[in-house]
Length: 549
Image 1 (spheres, rainbow, N blue to C red):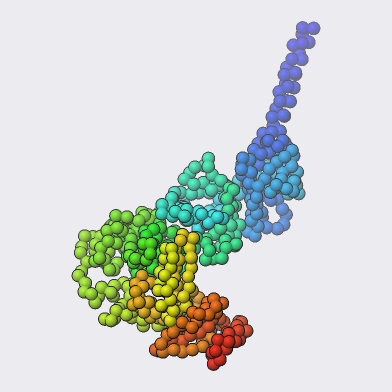
Image 2 (image 1 turned 30 degrees about the vertical axis):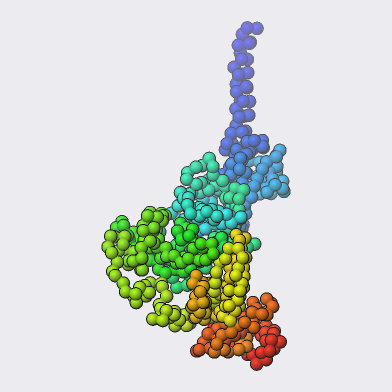
């Protein structure tokens, strides 16, 4: 008996070992045994897979780790992303459509799909997302703006307080966007066309949010015509420096962007003048190396109107953006010093002052001819000829009034333009005159408005579509009803608002032309007839259509 017990013991131990080995092997990563346990699948499924298909375009799948539960499937034509979860032995893609799931060694069985483990997919996905994320993205609520640049540098700001933008480094890890190498706080991203889903948030490419018209986004603006230029800005390379007029918090602001191949790669920190008041024009913009480090910085001269409560006070802001390599910063000390000096009239003056040189003395005659300022004749009126070819639609902002408006005083301007009032939610009322076709007309009227005691009035470009239209596009026309040697619009100001909004004034060869509407009659021929009938009801039966551009 004793001998028989000793004989069977090794076989019992061997049997237990084999049973244990088989059990463990079925759950070991890469084992040929199938894994159907939900918890183990959640661990094993992470990473890249290639669709096994005899024909068709190769398709790749990638699954993030279980705590986030995101997936993406992509090929040349397919780009689909969503969430995944496992319950029992089924996988739910995007919360529905359960599919039986099983991992059999290096094979993933997902419903009717068969995928094979592919470690290259991870790198392909990272390269793809790294390309697609480049550019500027605005959050769904338009409060945050992120810019991702090709040198793995990012910058973000809040649109309600863009004065102190934050920045750092970014990279793609699998399907996750990692900021400042903080992997523990990284969220997965999915990019489809112009939309970026980032964790629980949605972003849209700048200017491409579908439910908002282009002018409604806080991050957009209008390129200031003729002021963009190319410059070598060190690590940014050869870029286009582009100034924009942006509609901010009920007032215009200046924004400066760096463009490459037509896309924004960087936005300068907020221009200091935006906190002072309303942007009133760009005088000069240049790239110069001001500190001798071998890379160009940016120098900007702009005009602003400060709202003092009952009037707008003009100010010049001369700002210096120092090039730090991957970003720019406003040199506040230099900006304050240069903006407070009456001797600074040009970019060269700024450079000399920065280097400790005193700008050359100026006479009253040549001061007004500095870069970007209006030339004045000895009588003080504007040199209108430089606006002769401009066709932008303008208005004149006469005043920004806190509280009650002195309408009797404003009514004394009724001969010069159609008067309108626009109330703001901050208690101000903007008083406007216009509309005028061409800056020459607007500035002629502006000088007359100022001569009547409204010294803070200024021209606002409302629309620039006539200047910007393509050469082969249909012409814009207006229906002319009168030509006057002396401008007098008092009778038109008495009309109902439905008429007043269509009245335009154009100056040409000593006469003010009054007209109705701006339209492309080749596209909408019935519009001209509507204005003809309107003019006839007002007593102008001899009107005619004329081309504006």
